[in-house]
Length: 639
Image: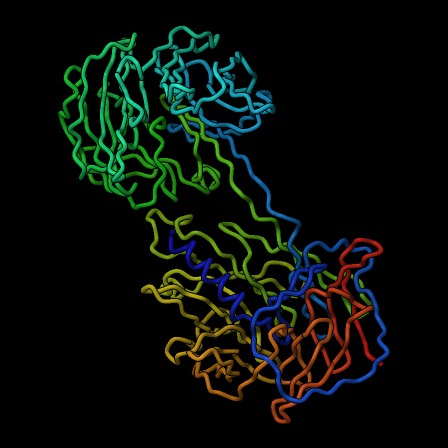
C-alpha cells in the first residue's frame, strides 16, 4: 500500500476511534451529513452530573426555495448564517484529445459515434484511429474512426468470447494488430491477429502458443509487427517462488521462429514496453519500479542487445509505449506533462505541459498513441463535485452564493471569519504544478473570498511542504482573525498531528505538535471565548488543552470522560464544550464539572446533521424533512 493510502486509512481509523466533532465560533465540524444517523466516535465521555429541563421549541426554516444538497457545515457569523454544501456525488470525467507535438494544437474529439460502453485500448493509424472497446452488451469490438470528425469508418467484432485483450497496436503499414489470450478447457492460447486498417477485415491469425511451444506457466505480454510482417513477442514464465523469467521472440508473419532470447538480467527488471525508434531500431524498455528504465536496442537478426541506455525519471511516471515524440528516443508521461529524452543526453524536455497545453486529467491516461506529430490521449478520472457557500441574512433571505473554485485539486476545508471573509483550502497533487515528482503526498493553496463571495486573494505556506505526507482536517478562525489549521501527518513511519496558527494572510505565528507532548490532537475547539484542542494521551484519556496562538503551547485545562455515543458539536456561548448524545444536545461547564441539557431535538429536527449551538436556548442545524424529502436548515429556539 502506498503511504498516501495508508495515511487515509489511518485517518479513517483515527476518526472512528478518536475523533469528536468540532466546536467553534464561525466554523465547521465533523458531524453526520444531513438526513443520516449521527456517527458515534469514541470521544470523551461525561460521567459528571447532568441537568435536564422541559422545553417548548419553536422552529423556523431558513432559505426557503433554496435546494440544499449535502450540507457540510452551518456557520453563523454576526446576523448571517453561512451554509457550505457539496453538490451530490462525484462523477466520471472522460477526456479525449487529438493534438500535435509540433504546433501544440489540441482539440477534443467526440467518440460517441462508437456507441461504446468503455474503451480498452487505442492505436494510431495513418488514416484513422483504432479502438478496442466493449459495447453496451459487453461485447468487444474494434472500430476505426476519422481523426477529425469521430465518424466510424469501419467496425468489427473480435472473435471468441472467453479471452483477454493483451495488446492492440498499429504496425505503421496499414494494419491494426490484436494480441489476445483465449481460455478454454485446454488452457490459455495466445493469438496474434492482423486487421486491415481501413476495412478492419481479418487478414492473418497466428496461434503463438502453438508456434512458440508455450506451456501453461508462460504468458505473452506484448507483440509488435515490423514493416516486413515479422513480429517481436515478449513473454514471461511464472514460478511458484514468484520469480519471473523473461523471454524475447521474433517470428515471421506466419509465426515461424527467427530467434528466442531468455538471457535478460534481473537487474534490468521486467518488460515495460517496446517500440521502434525513428532510426528503425527495435527498442525494448525494462524497469523494476517505473522510475528507472533500461532501454535495449535489439539487433533485428540475432535479438542481442546492441546498446542499453539508462533512463532516470522523476518517479511514479506513466509509460505507454505507443506514444512517442518525434526527435526523441524515449517518451513518458509525468505529472507535469509528456516528456521526451535522448539517449545521448541526461536532459529531458517537457514537450506538452499539463494544465497549459493539455488537460491535467490526461496525466492519468491509460490509452494513448501517436503517428508522427499527431497523437491521441484518452482518460477517465473521478472528478470531485463542486463545493459552494450560501449566506442567509437575519430574515432568512439569500444574500450570497459562491462556488469554492479550485484549479489544481479539490476543496478540502473552509472557515468563515468574524467579518464574513471566507478562507478555504485546495488540496492537490504537488506534481500538478512542477516538473519533478515531489516527495510530499499533498500540497495546499488557500483561497480568500470577500464577504460578498467574490475572490480576493490566495496564498501558499511553504513550511507545509516539510510535513511529509499530510491531510488537512480542520480550519478555524478565532475572534482576532487568526486561522487555526489541524493536520494529520505521516513522517518517518509515525502518525502525528500538528496545528498551525497563521494570520489572515497565511503568515505563520506558531505551531503546536502533538507528538512532542505525547498526545494526539483529535479536535480544534475555537470560539470567541477560547482556543482549545481535544487531545488523547498515551493511556487513551481525553485532555482538553488550551492552545496559545502566539507560542503554539498546549496547556492542560481539564480532563473529561464522555459516554461512548457522545460526540462534540459546534457551539459558542456560556458553555466550555457542547456535545450530542442521541437526539439531545448538551453543554458542559468545566468550572462546575456539570452538563446541562440545551435542547432535545426529537420530533423537531430528527436525525439532525450539522449542528451549531448559538446559545443555551438556540440551535441552528441541518435536518431531513421526511414530508418533502428535502434537506432544510432550521433555527430552533427553546422557550
